[in-house]
Length: 248
Length: 248
Ligand SMILES: [Ca+2]
Ligand SMILES: [Ca+2]
Ligand SMILES: [Mg+2]
Ligand SMILES: [Mg+2]
Image (cartoon, rainbow over all chains, first blue to last red; front, side):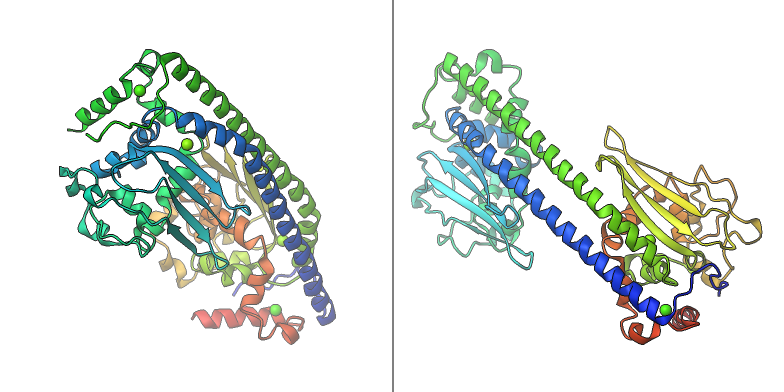
């Protein structure tokens, strides 16, 4: 045992009691300031969320007119591209809008709206994946039930099915009704609200990375030919064929 | 290959060019709003940092009068307690103030000031561990050179030396000069500015957890007897002996 601390100012019992009381009071004041700071920061975030809204809307409107914008972004994204299989790609060709909406209080979650053109795979125009944080800080999620077209619900069948394990695809969402367990990793993530899909890794990549600046990912692999190439008549078909060639 | 997207509105080359230009403009506006939001949030944080300062000062003054406050906090903390060995404990009995100061711009780092009573181990009153984030987002750290008292620089030698591996203790700070590699994990962390100690895990625990509310950790293991016990004449010595008994 080391020597007792000889320089410590000794307090008597009453002084000690008083000291703890005042430490408690000061701590309460610090706690109050911390809460007030969090509240003000939240207000700043909400204010800028509102200011960004019309810009997001305008950007989304414009992007929806660029052929194959979102599939290109996803395929150019280092994390997402490796997750997509051919079934995903077939479906995501028809994805024309991606809109991320934070809940009004920001802290409690966000939703991602995927808007599709008419397509041979499902009847929905808009499918929504929503993450909510509960009072007890748990993240839950739900997603729009997909109304698959029976004749072609899984995209064109390709050799890419080897990319996913049965274990992954068998985790089924409780709110989709069809037995469509052949779709790719992205659509599995979308429909799955219990297992893997309820972790929001894909969601966070979209919200915190892609949505912040999707154009950079679109341009990432097309900078060489975007100047003269992006307006040609059959340009988007050409691009897609090139991508398929690269993958084969 | 899936069917081309028949509902896509086709843009001619000039329209496409224009669309990308406007997307770029909108993106610039979004980027500008993001920067402005970060700036405002930083200002809020700085404002509250200032408001908390006098409370931290007052709390620190009061805490310095409570015998064995900081060693009790550290020993009651789930992460820190398991890292402290007997050499640390001997030295930390003399720790009377812990003050965390964020750099003015908050983003670029923080320093932790440890103030000691006169003690048999080193001559410094105040030793400072400082973490700085460089422009290129690297974290560097430096620490006050400890002026060990040669006769007792490592605390009283105990069987606790078995608690640390040679590998850990051999990582030496370049700015301490004595060959004092027998001190515990905490003092090793403090003095080491190259290896393990330059990761700021201990620092972040102190800054983001302990310093937010140290009283809760002090009270964690003493709630049973704090009411009548904390003011007694030889009370702190009794407490320490109890702690040592528990560890043997
Ligand atoms: Ca194109
Ligand atoms: Ca005591
Ligand atoms: Mg969009
Ligand atoms: Mg203090």
